[in-house]
Amino acid sequence: MKIAIVGAGIVGVTTAYELASDGHEVTVFEQRSAAAEEASFATAGLLAPHLLTPWAVPGFGHALRLMGPHATLRLSGGLSRANWAWLSRWRSATHASSAPAAALERLAQYSQSRLQALAQRHELDFEASQGRLVLLRTEQERAQLQPALQVLRDSGVALREVDADIARQIEPGLSPEAPLAGAIHLPDARAGNCRLFAQLLRQGTQGSGVHFAFNTRIDRIGTTPVGVVVQGESDLRRFDAVVLCAGTASAALLPALGMRLPMAAVYGYSVSAPLRESTHAPQASVVDAAQQISITRLGQRVRIAGGAELAGADAEHHAATLQRLYRTLNDWFPGGAQLSSGVQVWRGARPLLPDGAPVVGASGVPGLWLNTGHGAGGWALACGSARALADLMAQRVPEVPLDGLGMRPF
Image 1 (cartoon, one colour):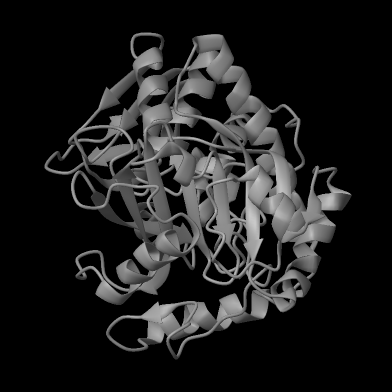
Image 2: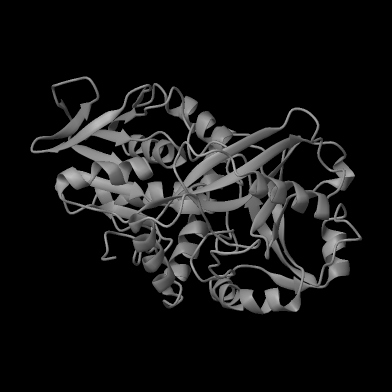
């Protein structure tokens, strides 16, 4: 088939790879000038296990707090009607069963195995690391994580609860002064550079059945006939199928087709700093459970990521959130990163649906497919989602169950 993909983030690039591998002729339309320039640009870098990633699934590991210095979610500019509607759905989802969480974790594990196979096959060096600690300041934090830990155990994920001494043996750079009640050790967890992987894979697909049209914005999706209308053009570019992989831009294209996705752009931050002293920095990745902040080693850099705010794309950086990232790094790994120069600060959207799960599959509109709404899990879920979507488009049963990940009522 001749297939159009809208969006060249990590989800769009992996989807293009899988469809081209199946023999399709693929064109990827991207409004930016390169791959992975928006939500995939400077992510936390965490792969599976997914459930212990900050903002992975509502109700697993953190409660919703809108006020005070330890607010989970910051509301910039007040509570609009759209934000209130999304928050109401999000809070309702926190009381749902663990079934969606288990489905997401299965997809994340499958995605990680698929990613590793691609990296090995094409010799992609994307600054990968193995192993993760979820740091617990109090025993109460351990209790809050038990629902997520049970889902991980039921999914066959290797984990162990360790005390502070063993945690510091696993990550020797942890400050001996930081209050630490214990940790969750995930020996098989992985992390890596999302943007680097996307760009390496994009380079590998170029010329093998995939064409990338950068600096090209899609104004409208056609359904009869199927195709896309590029901004500034009057004629429809025809395709046999269109796949939306463009995050929040996907949701903006759907109302004209009589469809809506209750997707919110929940913005987060990351700070990437050069490595200063290896023995004082993380060897792999850690997550501060209370602060919902991750600290990850990416080659010769350290990346601190966290924060969540409902705000506009052009909102100014929130100084207090950035200060919290720096403070958390200094609490756990003082002296591990060089913060006086060469620091990259990034604010990016997590295109999040209220139940935390993406939409992967047929849209219900002939010729239109969806692979979008991955939230904080775009990197962790991309390779698996892409392979599953390609299987569905070929009328094959995906290797991983997609329970509850297609179009659904909200």
